[in-house]
Length: 358
Image 1 (cartoon, rainbow, N blue to C red):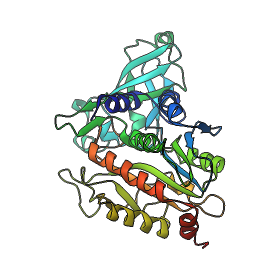
Image 2: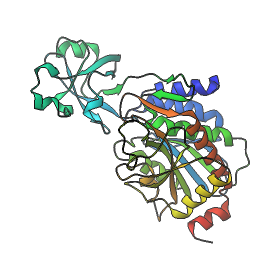
Image 3: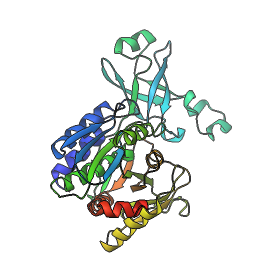
């Protein structure tokens, strides 16, 4: 991995961007897309794409900028912060973790705490602690002092955790690969295609507020109204001890994921088969995913208007929706290669054939 790629990954994953507060991540994405694009196209919600080409069918490729986080809901008299989740969290991964409270006066480091386990009854210790029983400690001694630090109800709270390349050189650690991985793939596809003569018009970038209901996906798809769309995201890796391989059979380093089913979408069969065949023809490894418990932006993309052929192309990730996650560099690169081949082949005739209008 070259320094430019590493720097972009670090910048993208270090930037905070919880649902509804994606500003910092948005600026990173915008700064990277602008030099690659003929035009920056946005909606009124915060989603962003770079456009290249200006004729032929319209293709949309997007990850989502937001990561799971929290929001300040109350400040106790003793200066502790109570909070609500933005996105799905599991209590086991939260306690004693650092967070960043983003106030108008600046960012504050906090730690998620709860009643000490030493004073819990044996039965209580066996249960996953509910989020409303947790708090964030920023070292304030009162609610007045917390407000002097800048904390107000409604302030965003982001998990803390820096990007790191693990010793293998290909295993990549960051708190928010869900879904800066999809944003990275979308940006790299645009980069690889920027000087190509495309048979279509490509819009590539990122949505907002996916983790709280695929909201930016709906506004972006309505803005661009593409002929074909792709959501880029992450899937749950099952290659760690104790995982049920039947429920999660994805492995890091074995290739990107082509989504065959999720809670929000059954992919367009002709588009799915077209991409599968391209992967085989170009010797690009891939994995199939049938997921009953999750959803992606594709869930909104595919039902816009009279229906838009849509496919989800992801990479496997370990430990999503926590303060750490791990992806594999080869999976990212192969996802980029697969989408570059796919988009390069989507001319007017092919798109009409996929849509069943030939």
